[in-house]
Structure formats: C-alpha cells, structure tokens
Amino acid sequence: MKRNVYEDFIEGAKDGIKVVVEILPTLIGLMVGVGIIRASGFLEFLGEKLAVLTEQIGFPAQLMPLTIVKMFSSSAATGLLLDVYKNYGADSFIGMVASLMMSSTETIFYTMSVYFLAAKVKKTRWTLSGALICTLVGIIASVVMASINR
Image 1: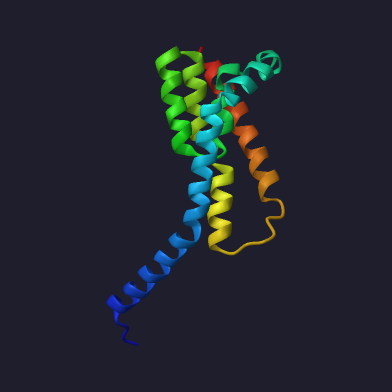
Image 2: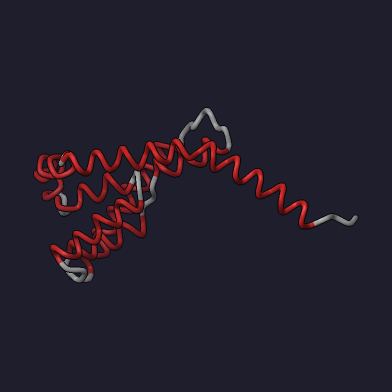
C-alpha cells in the first residue's frame, strides 16, 4: 500500500498545533503561578518553617523551595538551582543534593496537566499519589548518595 508521506506529515503537524493550542493556557497558568509564588517569598517562608523537621532527617532546609518548585516547573527549578550553586557551590553537600534531586525527580503537576489534558484523561486514579511517592524516594536517594560522597 502506497502512502503519501508528505500528506501524513502535514496532517500530523496540524494535529500537533491543535494540541499546543489546547494546552497553552494550562502552561501559561502554571508558569504565572510559579512566578507569583516565587516572587512572593512564600517558598523561603515555608523553607524556614519546615527547617526544624528537615534538618532532623538530614535534608537541607535551603532546598525546600527547590523541592516544591521542581514539582511544578523544571525551568523555574533550574533558576533556583543556579542560586543554590551561587550561594553554596556546586561541590558542597547542598549543591550535590540539589543536583541529584533535580535529576531524580519529576515535574509532577506540569506533566500531569499537560499530558492528561492532551489525552483528555479525566480520572487520574493513582497517578498523583504514585508520583509524589516516587518524588519522595528520589529526594531520599539524593540525600543518601550525597552523604556517601561527603
């Protein structure tokens, strides 16, 4: 069976543009929301309040803003990661935990909103709880691996 590959490509590109148009408001909303939370100082406030708990389990409280933002936006988290490197150094314990954490966690809410919206998934079932558990495991593994290299 012969197929016109170019026409198939054009049809696929049209479908892709439609998906982008459908998910663009969600992406803009996520970016604006993360920007507002970051600019308001709420992340630093939350990090200070949770420092009592996080320090006891060996997790640097300075990484709480990065941990929270990473669940929403990888690009915003990368900006925070650069701040961590500037303030503490890439080879410091905090820098190593941050690097490992960035590579072993996912942008949960961004991924769920974009892909579920594009696929028109209404019932997420266990996706969020499973993703949060996996993120927690990634964070714990990051602290353990950075502690081994101390």
